Length: 275
Image 1 (cartoon, rainbow, N blue to C red):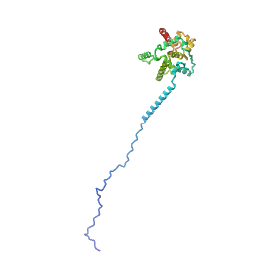
Image 2 (image 1 turned 120 degrees about the vertical axis):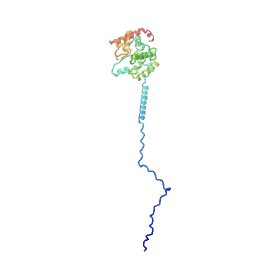
Image 3 (image 1 turned 135 degrees about the vertical axis):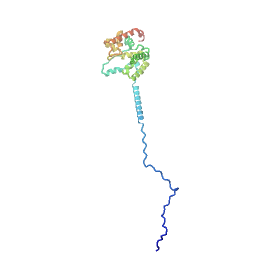
Image 4 (image 1 turned 30 degrees about the horizontal axis):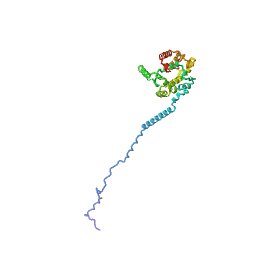
């Protein structure tokens, strides 16, 4: 055996091959491993949808109400030949258990004094207007403006008839609209004397007393055809307040109204020609 050669160089350590920079892909960028938050859901337009539903419901109610009014609307034209079986005011009294006194008579069976008295008390221009007394309405509004109060009533006989036959004594706007529409129909389909005849037969002349015939017999014991001028004036003077103003009542204001009606009757001689 040979002894080791002290001068023999030691072998160099092996080196790993260096990678080629051109063949090595670039390092991938570091990414955040935290998941991205999900987008919040878009809120639903609940308020808009709710308003739409309310509008549709309101529209449906209006349509139903209009349909109801159309179905139940009175046959005004039929009154040209037929007397109504009852009236809204009489039915209200009967529902309260009141024994109503009302009797139908023809236009010719009513005293001309009562016709003059009613016109003098309620509607002096009845045979001249078309259902609405524009001059009286303007006068009422002017007085209300000057006196800073609500306007007084300026209803014509035709308007009063429409209310008595089909409506209520309430003052809501829709009732006034219906009254105006029915008034127009009465004037279109009925002659003036027929409107007057109906009014004289359904107007309230005292507590539970409706129509000229019932009033004449209740308070004076005579038919409506036999009423005197003063008796007629007292009946007509109570038309604005029939529950408290009627023959037999002691009232200074009622007496004043009676004398006012008598004075108008005697001044308006032309009423004899139109009635």
